[in-house]
Length: 375
Image 1: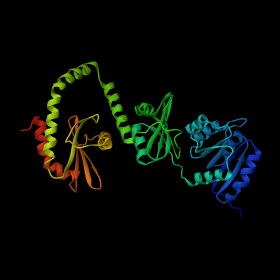
Image 2: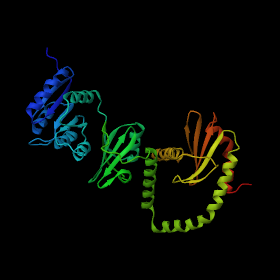
Image 3: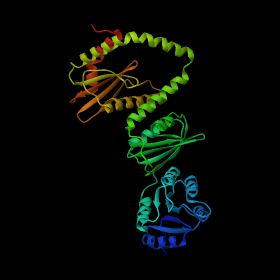
Image 4: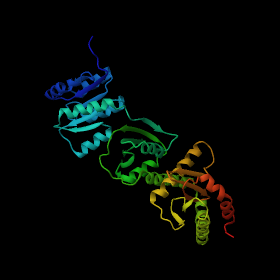
């Protein structure tokens, strides 16, 4: 009884001498996969219709259907099939286009056949690590956050109507984004403001270049702020806007008094056991006042991001906004509480828990903030 390989690999190239050479070398792995040869793009499509193919290795320059067109057809009709592109006419532009269309890997001729053999085996070992879907109930920022928390290296193709964009992840960090003529952070923020669309992700796709260096937490916090700001702007009418302008002038007179009150509250809290340092910030993450302790950008942005995500989750569950977000560390705890439009962030030391600390300070905080003064 002849052995039938579970996996199938399709080689597509119009140079018969090259396909013969590759067949001789790759035959060493006949126990791991079955090798199929096609000399044109049309032949390749015929093979794909007849049998499920796990990996396609295709040249770009062919007489009928070129390799990039074949790649697009495979990604659309057979999304679980991985495609390795090889070409003797390589350039950064061609590499970028192959990546944008969803190639698993890009090889420039001449190359060692052993290198291709290694790539094929790696592609067969890896499970298909991508997903295709439509953003309806979730915001795109939620999809991006999953990619970051999973520490993925992948590409995320996003489309809305006639617009198409790409977001690249490298080890969980957002490394590059492009949308039309936009690149980098502005392209990312423009896509994050979309209220609906479709996405298609592919694992293992490295960014063609790195145009973004900010931490993903900072990017999503800014993206969420812009999203909320855009939604609020759409909901406003001219009357509400005028009222806000008038109120802004009134608040200028109150700002100095408010800052003094918040400083005195921090001083009061610093005398309670477990207090390490504290800070008041506004809804945009701007520091209002601290208790003379240094804070890093990450220390302020990460809890704010978590509070924003918790608020979104509460809204989706039709619950009220969370009262507090607590983040636990090895030797300390961070607690973030919201009072009107302000946030109080407290860093606790030792084994002091957020519940213990705020149980001791709850009455003090509520009484002072409701009165707006300290006796």
